[in-house]
Image (cartoon, rainbow, N blue to C red; front, side, top):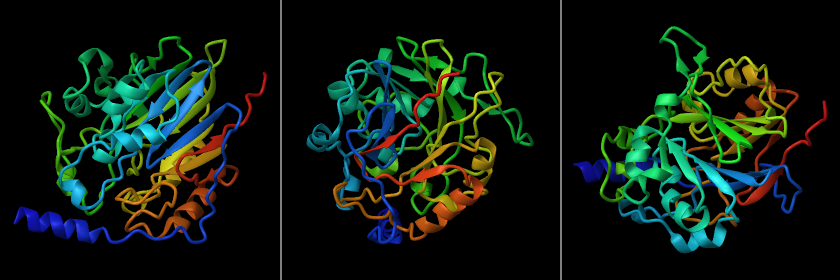
Length: 336
């Protein structure tokens, strides 16, 4: 019965489609500051000699391979940009398309990185990564004061800093919008795993985290504030908390996947933040295929509708849908 259910769930996700009329950006060799879109939900940013990496994933397994997942180390080695300066790796949740490649990336490509994630994600990664390179960020996350409150409250110890204190990040309580496979992949681990899960259904989401990332100037103040919404989520989950520094969000990184299953997403978030730049990620299919010829995520036929909603909610923002392994320019810092 379980295998029948798994097979039917996989069939329900349908087939990937061509991008069609979507206007995909495909820029390379840009001057910094910039962000590099690694594909799926992965983002890499270099800043003042340090780097921050979010949800790197390259192992595009085929449907049969989802029943016995292993990182595609050859593909990771071929696609991963230089990350020797990365000292902070931020993980949004524990599904395989976010967490499967993290250990190999840390070991081979980002040897200085410390990973920050949920309690459950840390328990999974302990199968491959020593505890001194993992931080349970969940107790530090900004969260709703109560179920009736629409405002996230930051913790006093909510910021994590990189070693040179050029970048800082704050975890935020979020949630994962449902899709046909989420019932199989929901849940959390409460103790360290001896080895990585193999079936995709055992890569449990745990507590989903959004992230607020500040790129700090020489004065220690935010030169850029970036909000990374790891998964489409019901409002106000994942929203940036109200902070006393009055710094506005310059860049929103928003996933397209399952947006139609989240309440008031992305309108309420963009109405709050009103960023200058919106970068749409997690739009392309990652089951098989190749980032060189990206297709639209299965069951995500209405990406155009999502773009329209973004533009209506944040009419002054520049909206970009990057191709995998391309770059997006950040506006130059304006001197005060």
